[in-house]
Length: 302
Image (cartoon, rainbow, N blue to C red):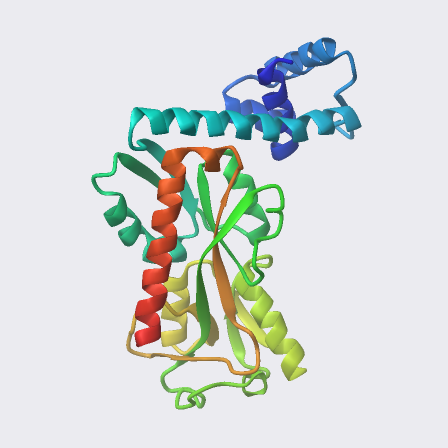
């Protein structure tokens, strides 16, 4: 078996289309299609079949794509053992993550890796929850978030919880709810609400508030950037959810915890199994976990 053929099938399984594989591997779609035909001749079985205007893996293709994960993981383990023989881990670790989590994790991560020989290249990615898993094809680690223990679509990846962060209701300082110590869902019934795009984890809490209160919120905006959300709340445009660790005190905004709706997000690191076998990636992941625990500890003391 040619490992390159296995890896090609794995890429198609993870990325979904020949075009996406071609873009990610810097080849033309025709070159990828030719290599798929070469793989079929080598294995002696059909590996892809038409699916609308594209292609999908056959049962045999899926079997080999799944097997490619185990092969790549074993090769990664061997590389790690070789690195151990050479000395301490070193190399570049590529990390993509949602900005509001990278903001509180990055300082501790960079500090802990200083002088270790392990460097990181950080990329901020603000996408829907289900889209974070796909980023693992192009990065060693992906920092995602979810109201569940693991983001949607991450079942083929290794996941590690880095931190759990409460989400508070942000209300204008002049709002009738600003003086409350905690809020019930019923307190927010029919309030103007600055939400996030559909499919983003914070929207799950908005839905839970509506179900609990029995009355929908009035969604006046859907915004990704928490700083823009803060500014709109401060100007009195509505209430919103904001993460506790990175929302800075500012005039015009008061944060109040919810008491009858679970509003805690899990900050999770995702990675392909073979990438997690790399010694440098393991060092970076351990530094992320330590950074998350440090931030949780500081928040608990306040």
